[in-house]
Length: 112
Length: 112
Image (cartoon, rainbow over all chains, first blue to last red; front, top):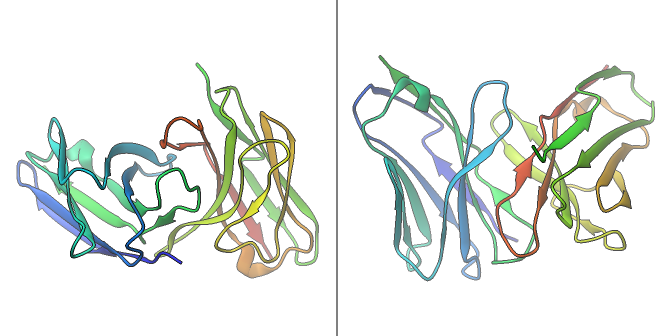
């Protein structure tokens, strides 16, 4: 089955700096890669996702890049703000297959 | 607003007790999921269901069972709870035409 590894487990940045979180996956058949944000005491919410037919996707201050050859994908947050502080999870699965595997999470702290 | 709800939100029980966690949704989605979240382990899939007559095991189904009573309801049972089932449990839903999963607020279960 799929195995997803996520790094780092914790990340602290100064407000306005960029943050990068990286994930690797093991199953070359995986072709859907979402990122979820979970604020303290709240439910996870999808912030961005990418399918394997594209290498990069952007949505305002967040972007995701995918390297299928190396089997890794990354979340980039630019101009970080205190409200970006949360735990971020990456995940991977085959498109329309419901057995999605999550990374262990990255706790991002943005210091004002 | 259409939503995913879980009951109870918190539960403390003793080893050996039977526990049922319930999930309801008003999103009209056909797919429903149960995950558990443990610190440092991310979200792990327990069971998922494509529709009322479809139930599938996830990554960690041992010790759990589920019932899809209706399109809008998906319950998770622990037949004989044990302490290592102490965790935060999330229900999620998705539409068959889209990949995004929408999570409920979570149920914090403690088994003493």
